[in-house]
Image (cartoon, rainbow, N blue to C red; front, side, top):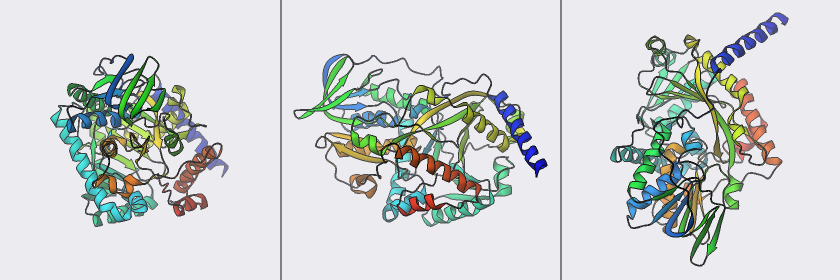
Length: 480
């Protein structure tokens, strides 16, 4: 036993050395945002003004809201206010998986919305189609590829889990292909793969920063007034409308859409139902032709393993591999600070996992290592709400699926501001909200206990402990 233990320690030490070398010199900037294609900043908001619709937050939800509002009513005066730069938070820090699902996958959908899952699947695919049409219509150069996503099993128990998911997806009429171990390894070469499930229609790969920048340009071309470096400090009712206070001005608006994602919300209801959980990611240097020949991956699918604490990864147009996930870190009191974006112990862990998955890439270096906050809610998928007599709406809680869902979130938010009615605002998905998170210090304990339990389940062939089973019974759906 001592020999076995010593060997394990030696192996972990060697893995740490390899990971540290691979990370040496990596930029802390998010790869997508570290781009010469970044647009020039828009001027901050000064003085006093008024508009028909004010949108707070210029990530994907906010930009989609402004764009769709002008498409539906070109005469509507829309002002888009952003505290930093367009797409500088979650919209520019993610993996670029633009997914059709509105429910964080079929299993979570069956848990929360079984009676309307068929409708939600249809709406999700329609939404993804509309994103694609907008990319084409506005000439958004974002390396859009409708290549799908593969879930991979890397442990025997995950093969059975993945097969059950396949059966549910087939029963729901989704276009999937089962890949046994040899077929999966022929598609993408990794000794860790035991099986794969390729969802062919339900995901596009995209450069998320260039997507949000391109949509913002299109919105401005339609007449949206964009102001960056403009933090909204206060939102209050004034007569028949709303007043937004910024450091250097006041904006009167007839309607307001709040699209602040994980950032502190302007309404108490928003702060109670979302917690910022930090996710980290790495980007490799461009691989050589010989290295790509050793990996394969000719069809550019996104990939995610089937563990509870999972990795997500994809290849890029310039021949790199993005590798992220696994750790999900919450900081007391919904903490959000720039220093939380850098977590060396997570980067080293991710790098070691990368080389376990692709040992043929030994010696590859990472050029970027970054983090960002995910707006996490207890049902794992987006929700909406209104305030101030229906004059204010918000869409939040994407829990990592916002690249695609953000357009749907914006569309429903606008429908709510316009008085509701119709299919979209009559769904259980859009009319209910997730359970609120408990107050501190219980909030931190719940998140940490859940994260620990998910890791424990992975180590015990997927067996969920009493804590996770209790959450399952409460309908909280923590499975990733």
